[in-house]
Amino acid sequence: MLFKTPTEKSLELIVTPDHATAGTAAAEIVAALIARASTRPVTIAYATGSSPRPIYAELRRRHEAGALSFKNTRAFLLDEYVGLAPDHPNAFAHFMEDNLFRFVDLPAARRHMPDGLAEPDAACAAYENEIHGAGGIDLMILGIGGNGHIAFNEPGAPKTSRTRRVTLAEETRRANRRFFEKDEDVPTHAITIGIANILEARAALLIANGASKAGAVAQALAGPVTADVPASFLQEFEGELSVVIDDAAAASLKI
Ligand code: GLP
Image (tube, rainbow, N blue to C red):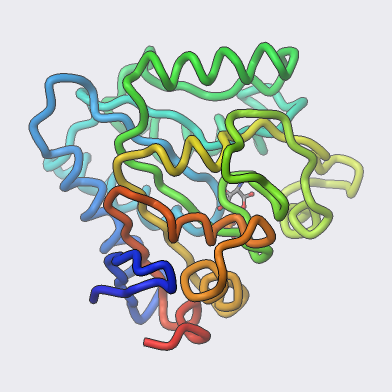
């Protein structure tokens, strides 16, 4: 259905009975973009986290069935923890390899990720250059944090922000604690693309599931546009915006 935000932005809203169905619907949007004829590789920025996993499972399934190729695509990661090597089990680089990249025909030279071990200012500048060199991002695949963060743009992130080193919110560290052995193992910082990078993309796809995301989803799509809820900046997205959520995540949205 078409959903209008308070800013009069029309977006495609798909509400599904469960998370798995949301993944399939979202994968269809990704596959349709890849299928569009393009003279340069289609550039996709990938989110990590539990929300997009069913998308990646469905994309893998389509690839294995011979129905989808990533040969003419280029991949960027939204963010990465500072201090983790790409092969660390909790590194986002590792997550993407493990959930999608190693199963598909995406050329290794077209897998871009912020370097969590490099000097952050240099790593951020290099990443901005890579995005620019690729001609920008065609599709942003986004999850949303319970506090309204997108990528690792925590509350307070300005609309003009670009790739930078950020301090993770305590709430975010708590949410990601389950993946680490000890409290002190959870990274305190990350490198993330900024809100401006997200708004510059040609299309964006937000996926969310579960009751714990209902408040953030409603604030993002139906509340005021504010840095307190970074995902609310999507109301100012100029390209094609699709939101795929399950019933539980849609519970606080008036539709
Ligand atoms: C993370 C990521 C975000 C993600 C969010 C929600 O740590 N940096 O890109 O959208 O938190 O994660 P999940 O989908 O596991 O709830």
